Amino acid sequence: MGFGAVIFVLFVVVGGGGWRADCFEIDQLFGANRSETSVLESMSYLESVYGVSASAAPPNALMVGLTLVQGAASKGAVCLDGSLPGYHLHRGFGSGANSWLIQLEGGGWCNNIRSCVYRKKTHRGSSNYFEKVIPFTGILSSRPQENPDFFNWNRVKIRYCDGASFAGDSENKAAGLQFRGQRIWRAAIEDLMSKGMRNANQALLSGCSAGGLASILHCDEFRSLFPGRTRVKCLSDAGLFMDSPDVSGGRTLRHFFSGVVSLQGVQRNLPGWCTSRLDPTSCFFPQNLISNVRTPLFILNAAYDSWQLQESLAPPTADPRGIWHDCKLNNERCSVTQIQFLQGFRNHMLNAIKGFAASRQTGLFINSCFAHCQSERQDTWFAPNSPLVHNKAVATAVGDWYFDRTNVKSIDCAYPCDRTCHNLVFRS
Image (cartoon, rainbow, N blue to C red; front, top):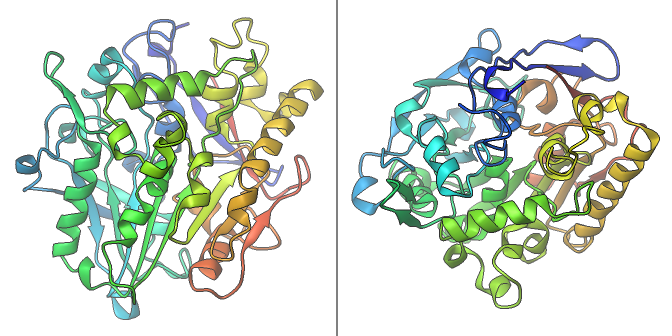
């Protein structure tokens, strides 16, 4: 059956125990079956599922309205279809009135004309399709019991409508495509600076998935906006995309990222110190960037990242016989051989962060879960049954690191030792 008519239901397994809510209907998501348009080449159903949408908002969630950046068009800072970019801002209060948290939205990438043309007809490529209000949960929550360290900050979610992690700068006039992610980033940040962020005494740039990659790419640039006295740090959630071989020995994600970088003009916005010694595609992979980020950076990632398992390690192109099908839907259905392969992926990830972890200013929370994006979801950020590493929830670990309360290098033992995970299970 083609993905165009499939309904996926996502469940979260809590601590190996009962089922947790969260159902998401993905109907006509791609407009074509999977053989015609790969998930990677559209906007990734997993990244769409993991995001917290208005329709999936928990009861009594804070709903925050959309602001379009009115001066963006004159700067060429537009979405794929030429529409204005936007963000959602909830003002800080009390002791957090002069502190700012910027969350960069995730949502896959597009790497060729066809997939970008499709994307511009969705909320991942056009503000015409943005939700007018979205829920602020997890790290964006305004409740101290849900978000103890950042609840009263100015909290912003910058919407993602370019398809290259806010890093491209090009166009294709024939297809009516504007690849202006870098300009969108600058225009949104300039607008927020004019609304008080320039006076911040504390700032945190964060992002999930493709937004987590963007937070790494823009971390030092963000730091440069503020005077030295301002505490500025960055958080990347589920953004540690690995340049790893897939189950067939190929390089699915490297091939895909190569298309993103070349099509959208990303190369000119990648760090010069990296492109002077590595090819541009390699410089889009975080493993080649993180050790040289000068600004304090925290890496939050699942060791068995669900997105990477589904779309990079075992995509249908690398698994034509569907041997990995059941394992991808439910980690408890993985064979011993498949788990061994995934342990190798975890080891690759841990080796990639060794140099990064050696710095005192960096932070780590690598849990051995089958998950993706844990900062925006309330159940994984801070809740009575949240995932723990060294008896700390994600929110506690990030807060301890940001405020220099303690050194945080939390790396979980290998699967299946962690019974606090909220492992994602998919049913089709």
